[in-house]
Length: 509
Image 1: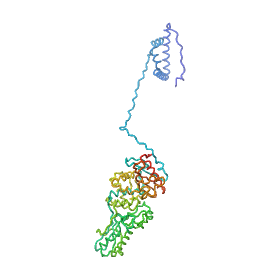
Image 2 (image 1 turned 90 degrees about the vertical axis):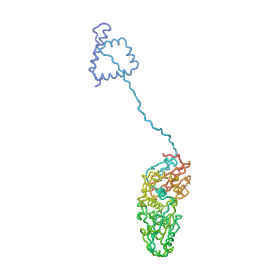
Image 3 (image 1 turned 30 degrees about the vertical axis):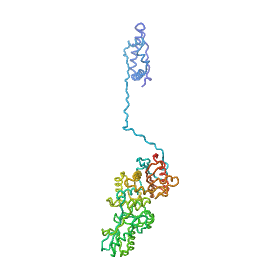
Image 4 (image 1 turned 45 degrees about the vertical axis):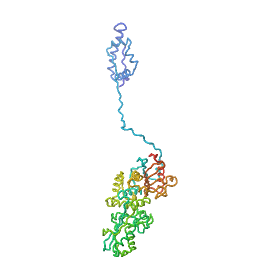
């Protein structure tokens, strides 16, 4: 209970005993002391509070309290001398405060450049749907712009740049793909053996300049057989498993419209109905179409019995080569496939690279192949790659945009023979699949962008190099993923043009 609630116990001062002022003072002092003791014993809690207040007054009273303690008046001195209570001096204990130790960085970081040119508006265009992209300064390797750049995603035909890099490393730029005819004298049987050359031409009128022809093969067979009758023709497409020719993720419209053939080791003219047309319907049996073209060439060459010879599909019956033709060098094939985005040619280079690496040429072998080559030859981090095909038609292909942008640095610098790829990339507003793009306000970047285009139903893509307005060399990869329409192309061009205008002042924010 508080002392404010306690009853008062006042006592009158004593006037008896002693004489003079001193006696009265002593009596009053003695009486006061007894009264105080009785008051303290009845109010212990109050004393504690009062003592605290007194201590505060003693500590904080300053010069006034100090003066009173050191120079008391005579009456106070007499009262103190006669009091049984000793005087108490309270001395505060000084405290010391030590600042905690502050951490100091081992090395003071250098100044960071503040870039002020933003392309956020262009990158946020709704036509780009779910956008991912990266821009890198090719000279310094610094990532200037990143939107989910480390996230693996479908690439569309941008994947053909990876396929080209793999083929250049595994096969070499001078390698050629060979088609052979084998047979043994006196048997009347020959085998047409495919080696993955999609450019072998039935007529010589081909989209593939410099392609070998079945007519040349037939002439060599005639020279080998002479007048010996031909009774059996075997069509051998077993360079890889003939049934491994179409991925379930591909749309059959790619075949019927004419963008892509089945992936067989033996075919002619990329299996086009019209060998001279880049986009032309493909058949459901490329091997049989190649056989028909070969038989016709044998008949035209005067090979006896060719028109009535039995024709079957399977492994060759002989290993003796009696005729052969070869494609253009791999470097030339790349220069043919990238500007037009030839799916069939890309698939052939991927499968032949697999075989040359010691694998089985299957689609399933491609992820391991690409990871190995792109890591060992080009020094890139391939841990997040998934490669379903060589063309990029599959929605299940997955490559981070930053990975492509970094590969493009080596393309730009012509490292490891990748100048072949740079020279074959379409140029904005001028060549290949970019010839009709970068128009209107984007025409300012015409000729400054070397890039591979990509398009599947759920993605539009663009990746390559930019010679920026300020002279900076940039590399980039942009993916527009999801529900996209044809106008995504224009949105990609606008974004790339914005990057061209910003150059090294491109801000990530």
